[in-house]
Image (cartoon, rainbow, N blue to C red; front, side, top):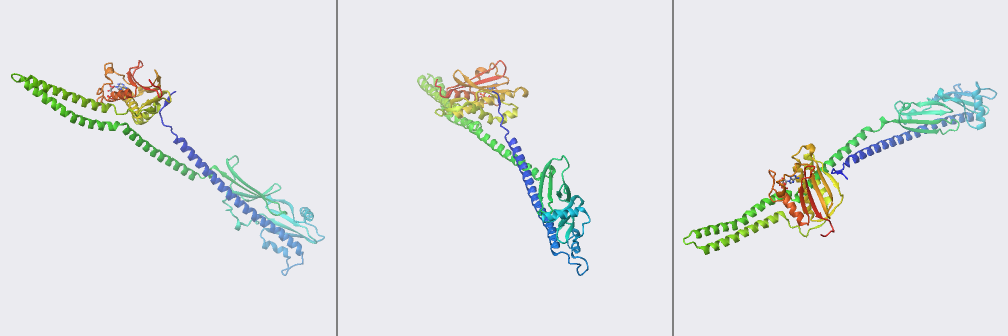
Length: 492
Ligand code: ADP
């Protein structure tokens, strides 16, 4: 299985989902608000129109009740003064006993009214903008001609008559009177439609109040939606920036823990310590050998005393060697015995690659991981991190010597000869044949600023954990370093 060691860009899809989700929510809540407003307005319109038509019933009932009592003081019959009081009433007609209506529609309506015992419509056609209604009574029946335009109480109307997008009409038996034109969508236009249908509350005039509101895509709250999406993008960018800063800090802390920075400082201290500790035995060696030289030059030479001085010089030289050995052990083999535990080698590789991510990027190298996804070894985690880090860093440094397009770094994990193995293979120049036998010597380096301690330290650490490191030039070119460590739970 191959896997590129790249962090998942989870925040891009997450950001898109949050931004889109929020925008959809804004659009939906805006639509819900517009629908609620539409329904409230439509109910008010229905109530107002119902109040108007109920008035007509009341007027007719009053006329029928009073019956004609001749002309009033002004000489006009009282019903003829009604249009002056009610602007929607265009005319009042009456049929006295033994008279006939001027047209059959009124006669038919009167018959219907007599049967229904309420006012009835006379061949209504709402499209014409007016309608007539008759209430049969004895001896005189009355008819009203009502103007639909004059019937609308504009002063109480809940919408702006000209500019409102809501279309309001009265519908009866297929004919329609448009009260307010609104802004209906063009045929085939997409969007949302709110509708309201309710018959006015007067049995004699069963007109359907129909309100329609079309909401197009352009009427969605695009400004707010865009502002929301920009805020999410900004917030995520800020979060991403913070996260990046945090991971940079973590990486630096880890590097410090690994001792890459600390080790260099310690080296300075060690050099000073070494000079201090070696100064004394070396001075003694010098003094003793000079004394022996003088004694041997004497005539006759004081051989016994010179022998004593040389013995002392040899002892001091051994002490100096011990100091050097002790300091070397301190540099190369930190006291890690007893800190061994079960560690996942794959995790160690992952950690090292994470720390070296900037180094890889800088050189345009994309490390490839092959083989086991989990490999438990018995090791000191700090020492293991140190080894893996060194091997990968060496490979990256070797890759600098070849063209950017030819740089490959493959990390293979597996089990060989009963041990866990990590092979770090690079497509660098490989190891020169004369360099190969000296590779793990302390202070051996072919690099200008190299300390030559990395590989010798790695070897000491690996051996300290019961493992080994080998180097080779594979036939395909480049170099491969194999780190082998005991598998967890397997005792040699
Ligand atoms: P330094 O890196 O300080 O030189 P090291 O002990 O890590 O010390 O490496 C010793 C030498 O081994 C390097 O100078 C280099 O010549 C050689 N070497 C290490 N790794 C590689 C590699 N991947 N390819 C080629 N040569 C390498």
